[in-house]
Image 1 (tube, rainbow, N blue to C red):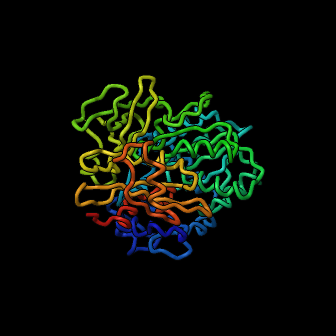
Image 2 (cartoon, helix red, strand yellow):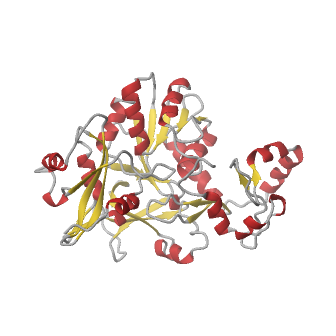
Image 3 (cartoon, helix red, strand yellow):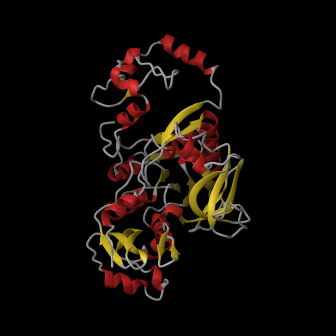
Length: 431
């Protein structure tokens, strides 16, 4: 789509398939992917080698529909059906290969756990459909269990989402923490008549304060926590709908037919309750990174254990807690600090709408903490006030030495915060 400015998807496809730029749509052929015969674009600008979506709609006929049915007989559940590019929260996106079995079965598991059905569930789709959150978590469960999908707007719009919840009487909503922050702020101003029964939150870290506001402001009856990654198809941990207590730390329990373990830096399995890197194995783990065997070997071993890059605590009952991203760890004077713990605490400040903590270079300590804060409308905050708020309540070495007030945070198209962009923006050596 022309509206997406963060990435040029046509250019990515041209890097993958160079022939695209030198042929027309009818004669497209690729030596790299010989089975690919057709490329379809929804851009308003004509693109070499690609049909326009609206052209394709006009071209459809009965013979084509019949051929689809015939072709289905040759498709295997293990065939790759989706090369899903990662969101780019840590840098350059990679092509993640997923198959039919993974997407269909993960969608079924999600819908069954959330108790979706045809009678009571109208799902407001805030998330983009090109992401596994939209494609697997929203679309597939609705296909399995007959839910109604409400698509509020072509692009992400909190205003359109809130209007759709009211006007279309949506009672289920899925989204990232950032999306719920936006809805809470809008609903606080608009006070629309909404009736949300269930909400699924995932794709990034959230604070206990956010969950509280989702219940108090959006009046959501059941909040379901989820954990997963594109490399694991979508969701691998999910909280159950029969949980009466709102858990603020756990991301639920490990899913059916999925294995999980936590390992140390040497790859040795750690006991329950000990923090380490989460590894996943099962039907959900990707085939590989498209065309990048070395990158694949970095994250997946010969027994197909996939490293998630997340510091995690696994409990004996199968539930888990995300401590933070291993790549986000800040090493201050030899002390390892995981930003999520600091973010969870600082988010309780009454003037703060959203906070993300990063490491910035420091000549003496190596790294120091910087709090990047989006304030509530009409609020003020300086470093001295933030320091006073933290003193005696978290360890001194975890108190940020820098504060940056921002209007908004750099995000991927799927709503995830790009911390590496924040580090590039604010990183300067402090003596």
